[in-house]
Amino acid sequence: MALLIFSVWLPANAAPNLQQQVGTPTPGADGRIIYIVQPGDTCTRVSLLTGISVDQLRQLNSKLDENCTLVEGQELLIGLVAPATETPTPIIEFGTPTATPTPLSGTTEVCVLLFNDVNGNAIREETEPAVADGAVSVTEINGAYSGSQTTVIPSDPEAFQGICFTDVPEGTYNITVAIPDNYNPTTELNASLKVNAGDIAIVPFGIQSRDVVVDPNENQETPGDGGQNTILGIVGGLLLLGGVGLGYYAWRTSRPESKLSGGGYLRK
Image (cartoon, rainbow, N blue to C red):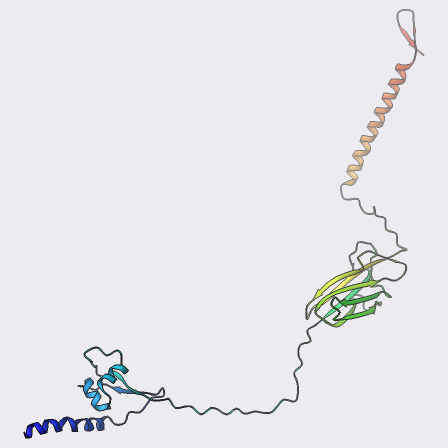
């Protein structure tokens, strides 16, 4: 009888002693409570040490086999707690800035060059000067921008790119030019131009003084034409000589003949 009472009393007092050996587990930063398997540990011993049932131990550690085999040094999850919430770092506000950053203007520049097209080839040569007193108009097709200026003679012809319209919004523009008196256009006097922000566009228009007469056949001769003209001259001379010979033959054959004594004929 005493033996039976002792066997009942022993399991009842064994768990507190084991739990005292383990102590209170400390959760990690992620809230998990881990037990490290010691030599001789079994699932039943870990259950007694930690105060959780074997079934709970299996649920928390799905990799345990059906025999609940443990290996020394193995990590067992025996509980979860909510991780501690970190204290947020306070945001320091320095107040509203008094200066407002300047945004990009998103504009472009359009320069119009009216030049004296001396040789009439519709291309601006370095020696062809700018012409003053021309009226230039630049208009955005949707009416977002419109501007006009009068052309001038530049103080620095080599660096001159024309009269320029600055801070022009990007878009598509119609550009027209009214030329001064005593000039004829050598190019179209209107153009359509599409510009994007940051572009610098240069649009040339050519005109020519009415006092300048350009022979359209001037300088049309190409290298080798001299030899060709010589050959044509020789052929023409031969044809002329042939014509003279044929004329003389026709004249001789058309003259009346007189019979001479001895059987000959005399042409008159």
